[in-house]
Length: 171
Image (cartoon, rainbow, N blue to C red):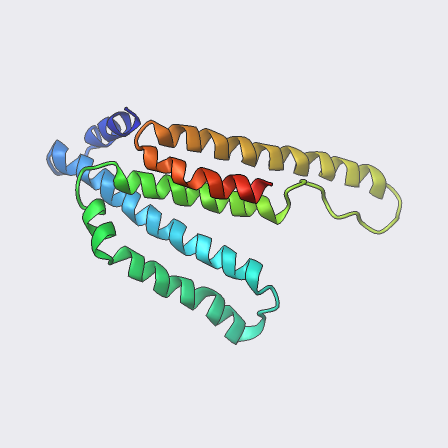
């Protein structure tokens, strides 16, 4: 149902092509966004695994490897086929990648606690305000992830595949 509703929005776009091609364009956009999520997940994972990579070579390794991997993913036969046909698979891969990336962003600071500043005038009040804001942001990310995963079921049950990994990350 969700794919049909969003496809209807794309069908109403004022583009110089038939409605079927506009809906197919929706799959192409979702496929491109899935490649972006693949890149972002790989970069974030490398930053977690190797936080000591600094300098030009470190930055090159952190960004070039995921870029090459995302290109391989983009031009793989299965992903290319799923992104160029009007089906739910490209949207499914995009939502799974987005939820994974959001979970990794949450994992950076799961408690939502800000770093306590050095003692000074007014620093305690400022820290408490930042701490409250950070915890609210952390909780909001969890709610957004759960909401997107629940929405993902409405167009493909394959979204359930990322539930286990994200749950383990939350633990």
